[in-house]
Image (cartoon, rainbow, N blue to C red):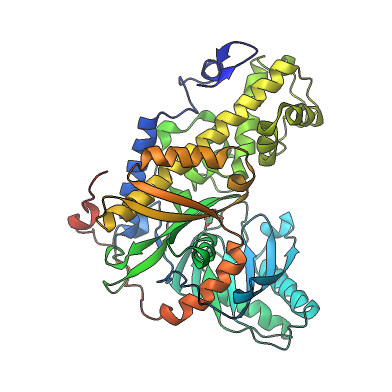
Length: 477
Ligand code: BGC
């Protein structure tokens, strides 16, 4: 357990001073196993033909039926919306060459109308084509759109809901490809070829899969969190056909939306959810991802200051302002005490050395919980793949991306260590994606389009699932 050096007592003792539960942010291995088991049940609900539409973990078919074989070629455009930046890319797959342009999406636009957003995207794409002399060509386009979408075909994708601070009107329930094409049509000065819709997890899996053909999981721990993996088609009851595999976008950020994680939520998680623009949804994501971690830390620090445990009981204006404690501060503070001092000064706080050490421990506790919860969820996926294939031992690769995973000094090592404990029969290689949303999108466009027409969704219906579907046996869990 983490010891607070200057005070000689543990952070748990400290945290229990301000929370009703003993160790609100520190989850035991047994609790993590329990979280993993609950997610396992939710994966089955999401895969079921009839239970799917009520399932919090959506398990969305992606129509990507194969990972790359390394021979993919071609010239593609890619759009990447839903991560830290909106980007437009031109990718030449076999040369690993690309040109990238970052375009800002102003905050007002994230909350404006869908038409404004798609007009802006079409303008950025138009400017990019113009400045790279590509306007005369009609290139295929991979659209990395990192929000939960019900994909009907590779180029037909209905937005289920916005996440991560976006809330543009008139887009939920609509086909995003259509909205993009309409915006391009309104301009009328360029054309695009066929479009493939890609979730960032899928792009990540595919870009890593180009280099390592045993990559069959893609995971993002950035602004949001999510994972996809290759599932046996016979288990995806909403898809016609029984043979082969399909990549499933789990949308694990929605885990807990039915209340199944309420017993591990802290008062700070509840507050973060309540004050978000989408209360009640993406509960798991709100405990884990970069959009929310900074705010959780801020709320804990405010509470401790009010309880006179920090900063001589004085809350600065910055610390009292929602959103002012950025998630990147967590990485910086954990990286060194000097950074902690600098950030606390910038936040206008009257700190001493003990305060700075306590703040580091608060950051460590909250980022560690995030890493361990991700590990529990990833363990569910690798254990499922192993059971699907009836293997005693699974060797697999996970493609990973996202600012939290990449930039935090100890997040990745904590996550990897915990997965090894929670999935001891799986030997996992972690590969950081070079550019899932660009190269990966191009890869999906190359691989998936030719295979997409082989499967289609079955009609949705309201009946109950067969018991055999809900209670699908899995060994060794
Ligand atoms: C979205 C996912 C996405 C994840 C990571 C979540 O908020 O729902 O579709 O993959 O963020 O970007």
